[in-house]
Image 1 (tube, rainbow, N blue to C red):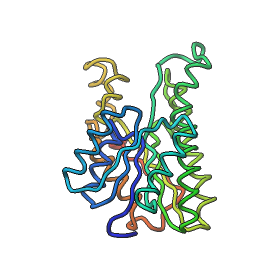
Image 2 (spheres, rainbow, N blue to C red):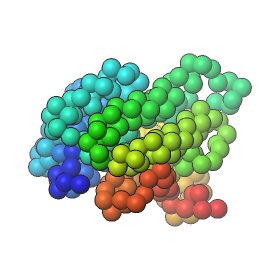
Image 3 (cartoon, one colour):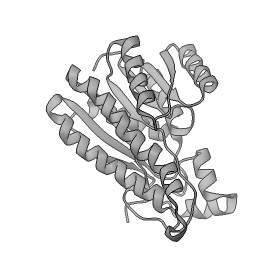
Image 4 (cartoon, rainbow, N blue to C red):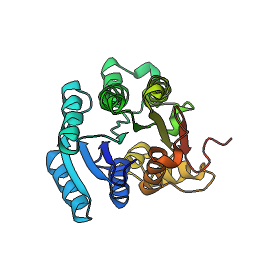
Length: 249
């Protein structure tokens, strides 16, 4: 990988995606950040450029293939190659038992988490296989390997992301392209606060983590940088679980 790799991050405006963009900026990467909100995106690109990174924002909604195609083509038009892609856009959906789920709630989660990841990889692999190199990192969750009452759609979507990751890795290996996933446990983000509802429930939830705390977005970003880099060059089709010990037992 070049000393100034070209990195694409979807879902870059908040949480793990945002921390990942800054982590790559510190690694001297050239960065394309993406999300649905143009003003926040331009502000993020400006912050990354102020750090000395070469960054550009391209507005895209990963649920729509035309947006994803435009995003990848825009990255290629700007930088001429694509070394790393991080598919970080995600939605948690509403908590409800299976008996109350609806097609609309299904689409609200799966269109972003699963279709968005699929479309991202489709177009990222289009350019990476042609150039004969590249590394894709998808974002799963602790829930990609276990169940959770009330969160069936989110859980199912992350199981699907892990299946997509493994399948794409097998297809891409012959072209010198790696595809892996990072699966965070509870991370100090707005999503965690929405999922746990209040401070008391959040504290009880984190008490179940062996390390007795939430992770930080920066800790996940460091794992993403590692998995995407040549330091993990013999790793593909894998899911790196970064969750404070949640899945150890």
